[in-house]
Image 1 (cartoon, rainbow, N blue to C red):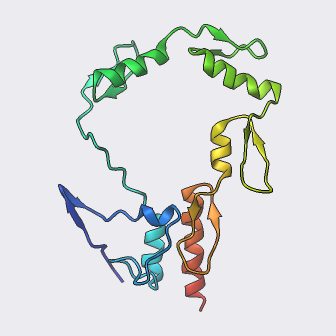
Image 2: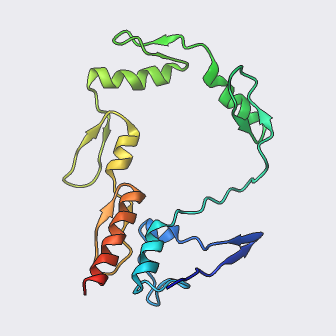
Image 3: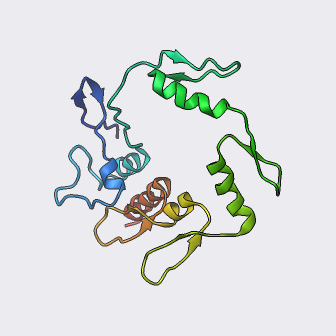
Length: 175
């Protein structure tokens, strides 16, 4: 069976964005327009979809980084100057391992790995886990909720949710 999702016209034909259902929103009672989730092929396709990134400024990247050997391009001078800072001298050196950083804040964050200090604590009742890096705490939280009624599984990463959604397709195949 060959199927095609309905297309929206937003400047150009793009597939609809279903990412809201990958971040905690349950499916509406009538399902998702354009997708028959009882069809295992469409369900699998839904699981493979990537959220569409909508950028407010779709200006072309025409400004090149002037640093020798860097090929990055930017939309404006401000973004390029911010990036240029990353090429600065790495004067902040870790006394433990010798790794060098452009910014002192990055060195301080790195040193948490050596000291074992974990200043970021989970605030969920009964958890209390602590992490040395803020992004580790964020991935500990599980914002990606399965959109199917009766399934309360949650995931820290959208890719894990997509894999899980395929289990719903397999379960329908086995019925």
